[in-house]
Amino acid sequence: MARLSNQDGQANHEGKANQEGLAKQEGLADWLPGRLAEARPVVTVIGDSILDGWWDGTIERFCREAPAPVVQVQRRDFAPGGAANTAMNLAAMGAQVRFISLIGEDSGGRTLLEQLRSAGVDVSHVVSHAEMTTTTKFRVSSGGQVMLRLDDAASEVPADGLRLMAAAIPDVLPGSSAVVLCDYGAGALEGAVRDALLENLGPQSEGHQTGRPGSDGAGAGFPVARQDTLVVLDAHYPGRWASLQPDLATPNAQEAARLLGTEFPGGAARCPFVEAHSDQLLRASGAAAVVVTLDREGTLTIRPNRDSQKPATHRTWARPQAEKQASGAGDTFVAALTIARAAGLPLTTSVDLAQAAADVVVHRPGTSVCTTEELATHLRGFADTALTDSELARQVEEHRREGKRIVLTNGCFDVLHRGHTRYLNQAKQLGDVLVVALNSDSSVRKLKGPDRPVNHEADRAAVIAALSCVDHVTVFDTPTPIPLIDLLRPDVYAKGGDYTPEMLQETEAVERYGGTVTILDYVPEHSTTAVLERIRSTGEAPQA
Image (tube, rainbow, N blue to C red; front, side, top):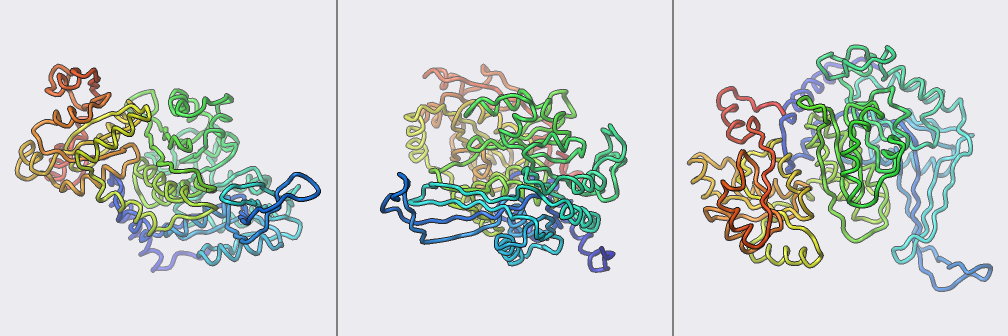
């Protein structure tokens, strides 16, 4: 690879400055996707390519040979899948994407390359091989229902094709802000490719457990290509890559179960199960952090905790709608998580953004990507979501008819920080629906002084509503939320701080109808007042 030109060096300097600015960003905002696109991090994606075929038609009769419906195909759509879909999503969000994969010299391979090139993905290191079959998955549907899937894949991956892929790896890695490994068991990351990845990205001494890139050890023990490079692993069998010590591993529930060698419970019980086994997941994956994706239950992020032997966790909640024939939302999640981390966003904010991107595509049929503008529009949609008392009461009553447990909390939530997001995550886990009541601007001034709030109530509502753990937001102007408590009668009233229930005026109102008051953790060093005092005295926000 050529050396960086002066222009490249200037761009790299600007990119690092941009990273430093984003490193303190807590919470989502509609300008964030655009800022990530402006950063244009270089991301290398290496892995198994798939071509997704979606054939749709009508059914009016059964065939004579068997009791099978005859689908009269009216539309044929193709889209890159697997690692190729991850590359497409990264490009759509503004990353400069280099792609390494192995495909066949067939119509599927040609279609795949054409669509990747059109999206701006660098495919100069994709290996086309005469003895390889491009993995293609044809889904046949009618009336929105998939009737059949036909898979066409290679029975054996050519070894010389893998050697050609492996030869490209040392040339492509330099200059990459992030590397995403997509191992779906199709064979592209076996043999010589696996050896090259471990040689160029893995620790140089066996059993090395410290000095990860970006840590205080400045990457000691890792090859030059790993310095300042985020390594993200998306693999069906993540334990096979534990020796690589990736920075992030993103297993789904089934893949995490394989790591633990056990069966996962179903539904809402999965997240508590993952949290209970968080330490084992970190050890088995070899990763610095693990993000377990749980479909409709959202995600759980696990990482070591400096203040406790128990790993720290961060939860997101999906926003599911009616079932649609969507595919590839996990690829979108990995892509958004990668570009956010590569651009310098904190891990928890990156995971929240990735959840939002996945929410965009999961509501569409077929395999699709989330663009910068689509993600910004999605986040912008939270701007006017604060409900009036009467609207909120109707929503809560509907939730109650569905048997859901209602949690209410309140506060100023002026300058959002990690203490807020951790607190709201805890509050959500007390029930099914979290309602956040924000103090109005006038009540914040009475409580905090004439120079507060820093952010007006509409902006505060938009930022809080964008958090996946929050279901509804409202604004109240009374001295206490007691009138709102009387109206909504939440099952749980949550409060954060060094209180006891007896100290709160709201306790009597909650207990009068049989509700529960719960006091959650307080993080004094991350209070808004502490943040503002730090900014005023030093010009810097406290480190997360």
